[in-house]
Image (cartoon, rainbow, N blue to C red; front, side):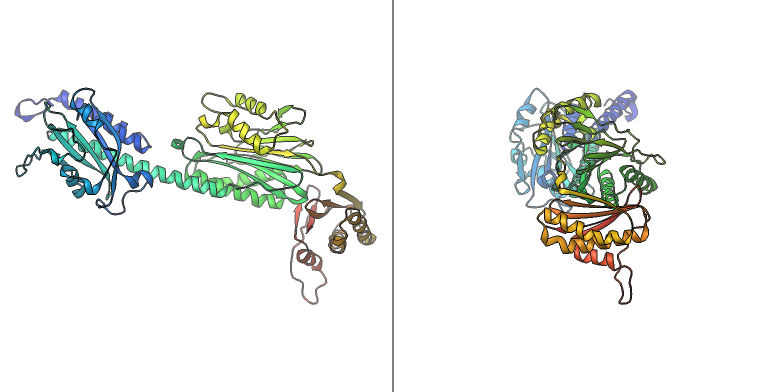
Length: 567
């Protein structure tokens, strides 16, 4: 820097130097990847500040994302070279090539040992009045065996009280040594790099927490259900983008039905993953109540608005909710601003399911719509997040076309199809998360289903035993006749008490025996333990005690009460 008379620096030089510091600070602090932060420090320092720059960080910082536990330098620590840069000509190029990749703290000597031990900036040769000014090669030989002359500054990289490592800056012989301005510049740049490294470590830690949180809340294995085969995949996106809020689920419902769900919370990080977990838990809870898909999304929208909105978070989420009935061979689907499902039929045809797009969850005060579509045996459905079908280089229409083409081999198992789809759509090149669920609908044979409609009079309950006995005998389930007859009679008797319209009873044989009774009364039964003198309430109490599981849910016309017996 040039100086005018009376010890004042030239204003143009000051302006130029400040501009350099600003540009260096922006570059060094503008990345969230640890290695890139260190690389930016080295590349901005050369050649303006030094002819050679390198950074060493503790191995634990790189492997665990954590600084050493003690504020000082651990005696058994290992420092790893993270970045280096040198001027293209002269000794600096030869010197930088000789830098070791790793060095133990116990092996450090000279200015390196002094800086790491004290946590302070150290210069070589020592310019202080009481310094020796020694240029003994042994003083720097542990890291710079090729440096026989020149000047060196070792600057600690600190994150709060913790020492992350150090940066070394070397000026070759023939260039003036580090003056006060150069040392201050090097210190400011190193401090900015340490702050950037600390920010990158926090970012990485949050990414790990978000990833662990998300993976812990996603289902590990699809449920095995009659009439449907399910497979799914989740792939994290570009690590620099952090974990997103993609999720999927398959929830068994009464009557051997299944709810298939895929959703996406917009954004990345812990908050998105936590919000995803809230939504997935809410969906499973709502699914257990068995409302229509549009009502599930309506309740989700209210929950999202109340929890996320009141917390001041600016999130939106999308979700598609599909219920497959293997007896009726139909799907009921509702959509909240999500990627539409794709159907692939046994004859090779594919189509986007024409479900209304809806609006994302979190918009509030909107109605969703359920559509019902046939799902013949052999039909595939693919539900995915936009990370699969949309990228910077591909719009969503092109991606959906590729998805449809990749589902052409409908006879392949869904698990294989998931792999085929991920390969075909080049998911390894995408930055966003990907969630994919594929299910094949095979239905339940009509020979395993029996239905009756009966008028609500006292004789109906007496007929139930005969209907049950004849059906189960034909199915070879004679050992289930007594229990099934007793519990079915209780459900029918309870329905007769509260309805004036016809009652429906259905038996379904799969891996379990299901009995379902529907009527037009909207009041769900409540389980309670009857007292010795109570006459009411014993029917549901018996159902609870003798069945493997039971439940009740609202229907459009009333309610359905069901129980299952293990086979």
